[in-house]
Image (cartoon, rainbow over all chains, first blue to last red; front, side, top):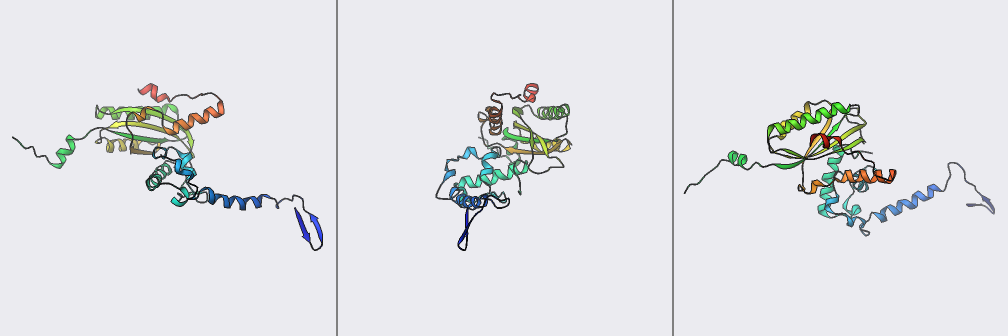
Length: 103
Length: 152
């Protein structure tokens, strides 16, 4: 990494607290919207029998990362029928303690 | 020619048939295996005593799983899963029978959407458990639920 101060140039090494990871977070945030967008219908593979309260690994992928709410249809890319069933099954699995109410 | 006119209550009683239900019970984390075994056997005897139509189709033990939030000061719980064909008159009696038990933290009783042939296979959570063990251990080293052997 090269910083230009006036006419002089200084090479900055890796310092604690200042790392290149902070740059990667901003790039990953933009990728998040592209993966779970309506254009890329990634979740169109999901069928009716797959959405149950027992299949917690699938239900976790359909919750938001911030507050663990159910994703909207724009982001999940599901049908109307599947989205209604997802809401019901998440309520059951939350009652049993398999999924959290709030992160 | 006779016309048999029935009341609504009489019609209900005649059309009562057994349906499939799914029952899930969570036990305490600090419980003995013997005490848990006695609770389940008493529950199954209670179901059989009321009606002869009632029967157990499947029972699974999902192990001691971590809970995502504390339930009555328990961080973990023993999960039990049953599939029962019950006469719907029993349901309120069965709920009272489970509520009295102090070792059971929480329970849930659902009408199953699937047929009896579907329940002969393992459930989805049981498949995921076995696949996780196969990845770690290499081979399947899973003790089948001891309830299945004793009760059935």
